Image (cartoon, rainbow, N blue to C red):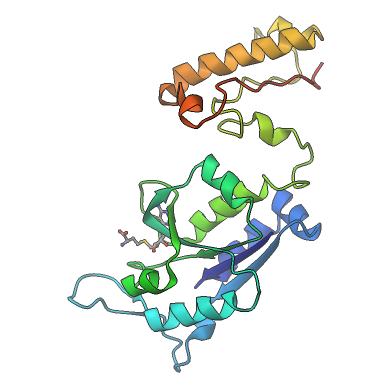
Length: 247
Ligand SMILES: C[S@@+](CC[C@H](N)C(=O)[O-])C[C@H]1O[C@@H](n2cnc3c(N)ncnc32)[C@H](O)[C@@H]1O
């Protein structure tokens, strides 16, 4: 999958893209991330990307005559137009379901704002989807783009070491509940023992324990999620581990 990221600060992504799962996915060619410095499309001496808002007020606004040509140019370089997303606190809130839908795409373009945001005509012309990562204000869209990139890429086939990992995560396909509790060695620490059932090797019992634990912790920690499976058109069944690898 190809990600095109439009930003005024491409170096923000340096560390992010050079570690761990993202680094491996890039090296394995599972994803292709292209950073576009929008300033490269500014043709004046100072590479101006922003200007004062009409009507007055604080801050600066990203210019329509810089951002639109940049996105149109990059978009037209491939026959795959992709899904254009503008990061904005005013967009629909990002969630796992949306990530799953984005993971079906061949190309995603992420447009990162800065300052007071975008001239409204940018959305009028480009008609992007607007996505927010939550009801709070960031300095820029870069961290929001990272959240989306990371959430989507880990859903792609072959990206995670264990193909099953995604299936059992909280909120994931077929499982709108929270993931169950996890334990690893030592079996006991400061008087706290691992639940006996996880050590007995009986896969059926382990799966049942995990399903019950998932249900209980969802009710306790996120009661708002209870009953959401049905609203999503899913079966309402909890997906649980059936091949434990911790003994
Ligand atoms: C300081 S914010 C501008 C906020 C804008 N004045 C408003 O109140 O809607 C600058 C940029 O950060 C990004 N941003 C800020 N908060 C965000 C959020 N919660 N989700 C996604 N992007 C966000 C957007 O790209 C935005 O254009």
